[in-house]
Length: 197
Image (cartoon, rainbow, N blue to C red; front, side):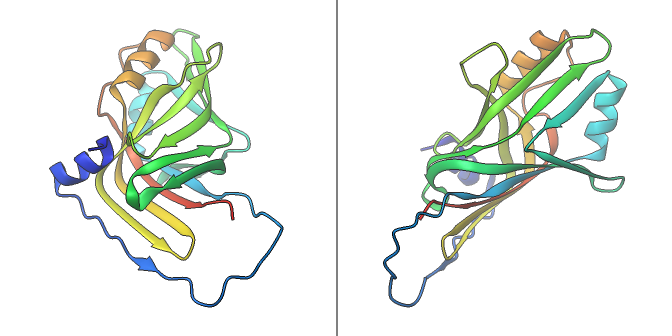
């Protein structure tokens, strides 16, 4: 059983599999529409405040786009750049463009993550840090997870988005801090993914 499906079963999370059939005859088309969608990470104001108190700043890197609301917190949108996945069936991967720069103002240390990938069967987001080719498990969808499909578009909404144990250890080591912990709540996730067709 995958990590995300096991987490859904263990926590009694709400899983909604609403399959909406695509009606009408298929139309032959030689053009291929690339994969599309986005992962929207909304951070809690409390997480941002505590990170700032510990000297930690997180900066999105293009083509990721940030937005800020003093009630909702910082929202970072990572655009889908590829992948082959079936989220309702818990398999495959979705890749994203953009990245995140983590900076510790107290130590002057930083680490940049790019090549974000949601491993659906493993149930976590990995990213490749600068100076490495090895992906690090960084963030985990958790809490109540709602999965649905409308036409070709697959959606995952997680009420909790948490720091993975491996990601916490990596960040603490690279940034010279003890701020990050396994299962640390950073906010919530809304992911939409339309496969190439």
